[in-house]
Structure formats: structure tokens, C-alpha cells
Image 1 (cartoon, rainbow, N blue to C red):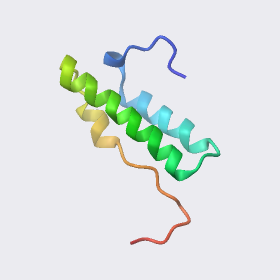
Image 2 (cartoon, helix red, strand yellow):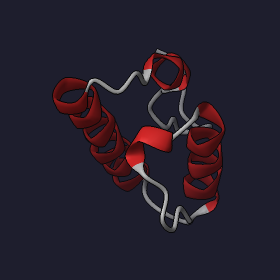
Image 3 (cartoon, rainbow, N blue to C red):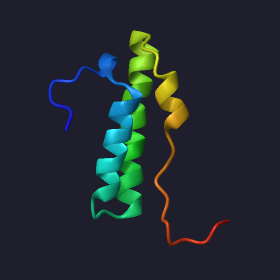
Image 4 (spheres, one colour):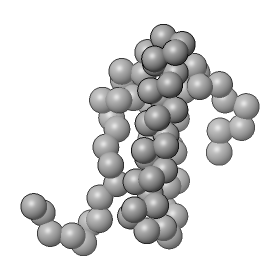
Length: 72
């Protein structure tokens, strides 16, 4: 999906494309949110250790939700 893309070059549009692709997959909600958590950890690593600014991406990030679940 992101062949040869460096983490410092990652943008909001890349994130939205990633999220769309994961949403289309026939995976359990827990698995999708596991991918989300891993992905967020990658961005956190880039922010903490390399001073990359992912604030615009963080503003768009949210966990995957089950569309059939009842609101809390």
C-alpha cells in the first residue's frame, strides 16, 4: 500500500487511504483496532524520537467502530 514511503512523508491523505483500505477488509473490529494502535505507535515513535509533526494526522485519527453496535 505504501511501498517506499518514508514515515516523515506520511500525510493526512495517506492516513485516510490506509483507513479506507482497512475498513474494507473483512476483519474483526478488535483486529482493525489492533492495526490502528500499531499505526499510532509508529507515528508516536516518529514524533518522540525524530521530531516529526503528525498533529494534522492525529486530529483525524479515531478507533474503528462497529456500525451495528448501539451507542453508549
